[in-house]
Length: 414
Ligand code: ADP
Picture 1 (tube, helix red, strand yellow):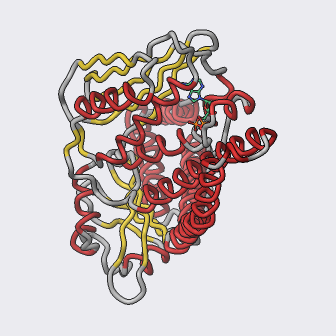
Picture 2 (cartoon, rainbow, N blue to C red):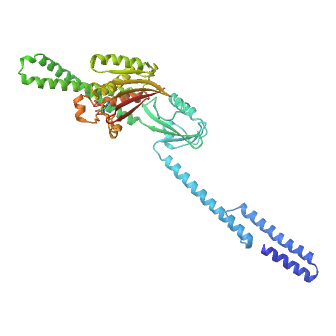
Picture 3 (spheres, rainbow, N blue to C red):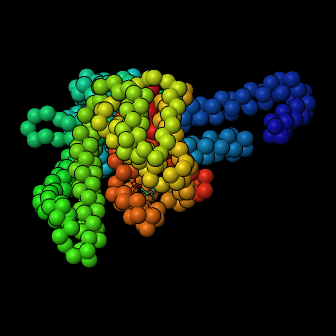
């Protein structure tokens, strides 16, 4: 502005000196306009190829060029930083052993890494924009994707050639786009199967000698009167321990059985209220001294396996009877709460300290070794309950406080 005023003042003074103030002022204004037009033209040429350094200039135009140049440089730097972050993330995804597929809201493939190409047989970039459901033609995956409940992962077996198993997991991000993770779990499942087979086989093999042993023991006990009384106690102890071992083998076999049929779909409708009524009648014979009270607020059943559910619920009720005093009743409560069906087994026993709760369903985990061996448990009861719950998509919840009793609840989704 100062320069502009200076030029105009100089033109006015020159005009006044030469007697043509208006003409000189006009000439001055025209000169300033020409200079500005020239600068605009230079700027346009520069902006056509902003890679060039800005034209040399001074005054206001110099400031304008410098500011634009600085903003351009900052913009370029931010872009390249962003690009290198994207490249870095993409290369880390690309190098993952698990398959990763980015899907749009509509389920079209946006990007996938090398592992996803091998695992799912995709071709990238050829398949970009294609719907994943058209390329991954597995009915289970179709159901999983369309169902929209991604809180659990999906495990599918692939047919043909060598049997392979894939685990698929979907998460949503940004505005409802999807990230699909795929992992080959064949080896893991094989190892798990081997472990289950081993436990199952060992338990099975141990049962045969145990049966022989128990048979002889019973014969000896039947002829007990003919023995020296000193042998009576050892014989009773042997019989008790043989029974414990038999229970343990039975539980181990049962656990390995329910573990191996876990993936099968449960279609049978089980009447839980009827099941607990039956259980109460059974216990009235085996534990006549105890009261098992029932509160059946609903007659709704759940999709499941009767034997498994019977074993889980009876384990909970037997625990409640085992760990609470004989004069205290045990309550079995079946009810609906919102979207869930709940089966609670409530006792007035000694309760369990909080630090034990997370580990209670581990095999052979015991809160109090001496109390448990006195009650003769196998240490597998709650592990069985947890497995049955998992195979029924149910959850085992434990509420307990020392001195206040315990409530074990199986929560079934409706
Ligand atoms: P166990 O055969 O020893 O009963 P479980 O797996 O059934 O094995 O139970 C694990 C442990 O949890 C038990 O040893 C016991 O310490 C504790 N427990 C289970 N149910 C109850 C209960 N109702 N009250 C108190 N403690 C319990």
